[in-house]
Image 1 (cartoon, rainbow, N blue to C red):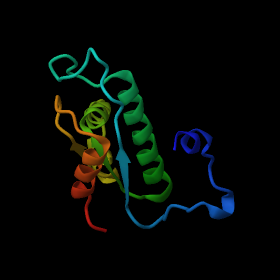
Image 2 (tube, rainbow, N blue to C red):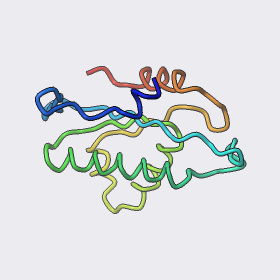
Image 3 (cartoon, rainbow, N blue to C red):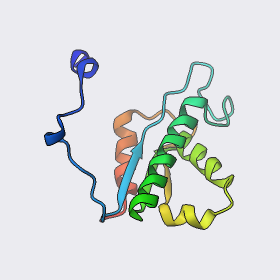
Length: 130
């Protein structure tokens, strides 16, 4: 499995799926694990730089889909990324524009370890039916 992960490449253009320009999208964002020094909200009350970068990347994708296609993208993210995304959006003057782009849903419990499968189940339960 490790070899497959390390040697994975994008499919050829003919095999790639294209995103619909009409349907709303849901973007799932998993966070990076905490470091040994950061195992609870008390130790690390705010997201680290990797999770802030994930939030900024998700926000750029959401903004691009809204600008180019008028398409809402709901973001379902682990709490660290969701917190960073909300902080990023709070710094803007146009909160209404952010709302038009789609909601941000936080999953997971700060300070409680959950494995990837558990987080994914939380994400699926939060997704709006299409």
